[in-house]
Image (cartoon, rainbow, N blue to C red; front, side, top):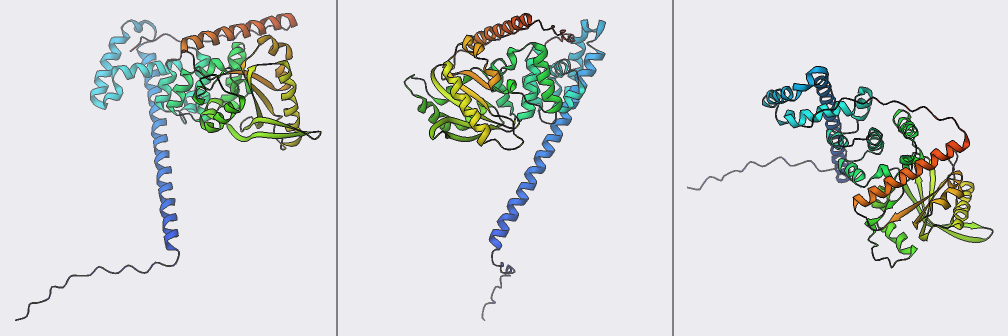
Length: 384
């Protein structure tokens, strides 16, 4: 007797794909992936924003109800007891240490409107980094720059560790003017050159540590490490050209580097000098700027700015030449990073000298002194 054949059910055959469907399918898959990733990012931002708002409200409530007035003496014990109950119900995010972070958050950022504006871009880990900064102006500077340039937490930490605020031109101004610059950035999104330009620029990432290099080596290293260089310059800088040819009366000049700052809406010309800044460097940069203004500036853009990066500079030369009136900045660059303590001491001394010079200039000009703005000092919170 013949064996019965075992019949294996066949899967239905897929319909023939129309011509070009592979490309269409890949595009569809890519579009759906993009939709999913966008939705995930939106959900993550919404969750983060809600959490930051929650932490601020918790910190504000504890400060007001427990740590305010006469209750501050036994406030620590109450916070500890509260954290034990909350941690048991809601997990480690509400332990004693985090509750004190929330309290300090409410202390350092008492204005709810400012917190609401910041929490759309800054995560709780961003705020944790900012809480360690005691100076309110410095803290506000980092918060607003982080919001505007959308720094990651790692970038924010890098900027703080490398003393970005102390290296800005803004830090050398009187406190009232610094506060005005930061308020303009926060309320109107208005970026000023003083918030952007630094001195010195830290170019240790270029790997030029031997001292035996020429200007072209620095320029080539900057192009090679362009991403890191733009991170040091600031997030709104865009690279335009290297060795930009400028022809005047049939004579060619070459500008080392040309960038564009999107928020300032200006071209920024950068000239590299290995040696000390010389008075003649001003004339050369002025020529570049006037040529760029005439030939390369588009309608609606502001006049270009110049940055002369040099190994050394004389403060008196810079002061006497009144470079700011020509739209020129002079800054040192460091190819080897000094110890943080040394850099911090040098920068603080530079800030002090600059403020003293401004005070003398104001006194000599007979200009009326602006009344100092009083800043409320919040009650100190015991460290967790």
